[in-house]
Amino acid sequence: MARHVTITGTRSIPIESELPGLFDSYLRPFAAPDAHFYLGGAAGIDTTALDWLADRSQAALTVVVPCTVVDQPAAAAASIRRWQDAGRLVEVVELGAARLGTAAYHARNRWMVDRSGFVIGFPRGTAPASGTWYTVNYAAEQGKPRLVVPV
Picture (cartoon, one colour):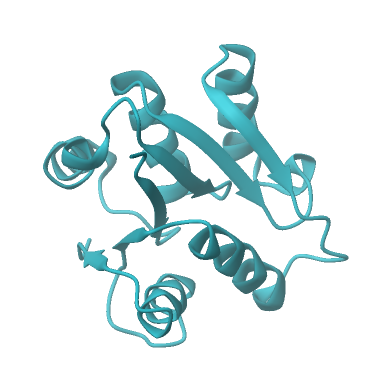
C-alpha cells in the first residue's frame, strides 16, 4: 500500500548544511519507492525537501503551488522546473489562486493534507499563526498522524 505524505515547513530555514542530516533521520524512513510525497513549491523547507527527495529517493513527488509556478520565488521555480525536466515529478499542481497570501497558502496546504495519510512538519518556533503549524493542526483535526521536527 502506497504511503502518501505531506511535507510542510518554514521558509526561514537554518543553515542548509544541517538539513540533510534531519532529512536522513526524518524523511528517509518514509521515502520507500511506493511512497508519494506532496510538497509546496515555496522557498525554504519545501524546495530543500524536494531537492533531497528527488536526489535521494525513488518516491513519487507532487509539487503543489497556490497560484502558478511562475509566481513562486525564483529559486523554488527553478528547482521545480529542474526536477520536472528530469522526470522526477509525477505532477505539478497549480491551484490558480487569484493572488498569493495566507488564504492561498492555507488552501494549498489543506489540498495536500486532504490527499495524504501522514504529515511531516518542520516548523521554526511555536507561533500558532505560522503556515507550518496551521498545516500540522489541520492534519490533527482530520485525525491524521503527524511528525513534528523543529528546525
